Image 1 (tube, rainbow, N blue to C red):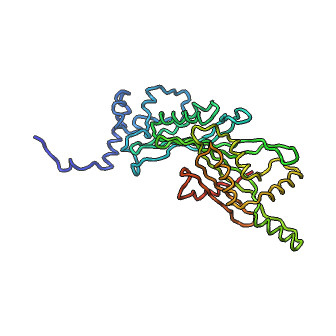
Image 2: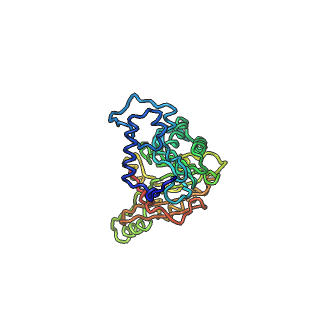
Length: 360
């Protein structure tokens, strides 16, 4: 005969659960290691353990122990929180290491580099093991970097993380020796550069970003100053200011190498009033003359850079963002010019122009 009590179908209360957990703990204290392992999935996490407060320096892990470690990021899709959607970029940003780069004129050069690596994540995957990105990149870190090396690193990313799309970005400060205008002195100019290799829908895109810093003399202010001198004998100076252009170019496939130095040379051809490194009095006078010979509004700067970029067959789509950080106004003058669909966008990051501030 089966006897059914009405309370048998009621869900256990919190007190019932706590009592059961306490019973399991008491049992685990006297149970064998095999019994504890057999009931491990249902035991409280602290069952039978007397927690140590001393770091176990001598403890060594073996393969079995590692296999038993929890790995939530590779868990089933049932663990996903929020919308079960495809994510375009998941990864890590700003891990730094010294990297050797090829240069056009002086052989390999080792520079501190900030690396960002990301991959796409399918809608049914919980996450990725972030450390794999660093480990994968480190396998190539002793090589002298070029886009060919970044290509191979990206292949490894995709294989290790089982992803369709991936991206590597490398930011660095690139030194070039620059001659003064008249004194014969020279010094190092440093250029903020970023390399990107992006794969989307099985198509790879190679992009170089360069921040070029120059002086811009206002054409209107120059004419007004000259008017005051000529008509009234009044000494007046035109206003000029430190300015920054962020040049972003897509490297055309199957063309010869586009060196960092080549991109800097294109910028100098477009706008020759680059800020100076080593300056004596004769150089300062020469710089004033150079600015007077090349007065530019921010619109002029964007078009002058565009003109030179269009002439180079190694460059496909590009974008020019220019910021003239006014000495007359308490605001900046800005312009954005894009060529082709790669950099065309409806919305700009709200802090885009703030990031163009150059710290010497």
